[in-house]
Length: 167
Length: 405
Image 1 (tube, each protein chain N blue to C red):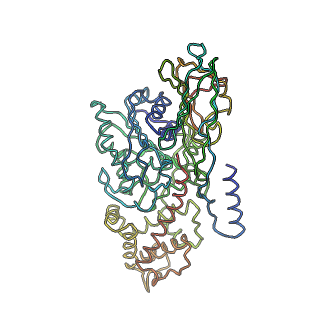
Image 2: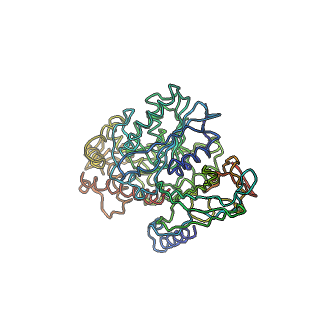
Image 3: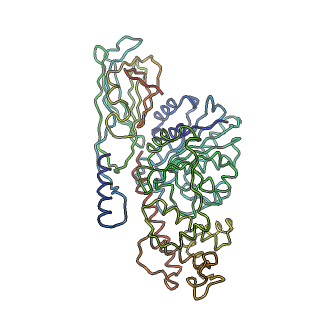
């Protein structure tokens, strides 16, 4: 956002000084590091009891539908810690992008999605509000899935956290 | 008969972008479970050449409503995708007209995208086992908005429902005046919810003879900035505006801009105030001025005017030929060429207005040329019109290329 404002102000300043027609800031594409998935950690439960050493699968759905899969596991006490996933993309200065991700767990070979989030902005925690408060989740695989909508994305999840604001 | 509130429609237009494959489309259904019946996942892909849109992505979601919308169907269309970064749908390559499903001239490119989904739409409606929906709600942002309008036309023409409602955000112009008038008469202007930002360049294109429905430029107009500002095209920006200003359609209020009166049009054409290409009003005025002058030439007959634009040659060729015809017409006070004649605007010849129009166009283009009877050849007018169309599309293309959702 700062880059856009800076470019815009410089363009307008140049236009006013030079007497030239007011024109748009440059919209040339540029490479940018984007966050595909913000970090996520918490405890995995089944009916309130920790699920130890369970396979966790993170599936990133890229624009166009391509899937990238990352494997993890819960600890002996059911805790999981999923790191941030980043990439570099070619964007326009005003690019709105959409990337979504699933967090699936396997309970006796049955796949359950405990977390799905779609983010429409590339910044860290863009899909969550306030940022960072969705850390330290408690995710019971038998919970109902609830939806949470934010300006730059939404979450469908079985997880709970301190400052839940359901839609 | 239920109507989506502004934020519901804007959210659906945004959420469709996240449906990148069938698994994420299921999440779209889950998110919207308050208004959409779960279980009947139907997704459509448009199968037009990859230069127009990416064929891998889901382009439309068909869903059955619930609660207030229990007898209704939703058809939600998406705009440009990351994979078609080039946004070729907005380029000049496909600009042209063809007859749409209801027999009116529509944009070739948008129509090809829509037509590629008709067999899938027919299969979806057939799956309803004869139950006729009360309302089909067609929703979309950007390209999705243009296709949603054509979809509503198809739904109405093929009598798939009792009523049709259309909700578009920052959509380009999908068809012609003749289409817009017929579409508005059949669907009812109160069922067409066109939302646009003043500064969004996409609703300004393609230039004349394309126009929006409902007829008469009525729309839910959101004042933003008086200059073209591409970020105001993004769906997130529309969500912000709707959240801030439009809890209901009543509070958003249709404050659309009406076509200028004949006196206002003549005053603008005769004024020597410098026209500013980056001002949103410039594109509105030039489109209205083209419409005004061409209608004068054909005696204000819409159908006669539309007929001119269907043909093998390009739009610029057709419009230039008609303008030249008008320029050569002269008029009751046409002494010594179109520039001469009486002093009052009301008695000016048609040729005079063609000349004033061409002066405005060359000003917008920044051409240092003295517009006279000698310079105004058909070839000159064609070049100017082609450049005008290209310039307007460049503004919009730059905005759309920024959207890689």
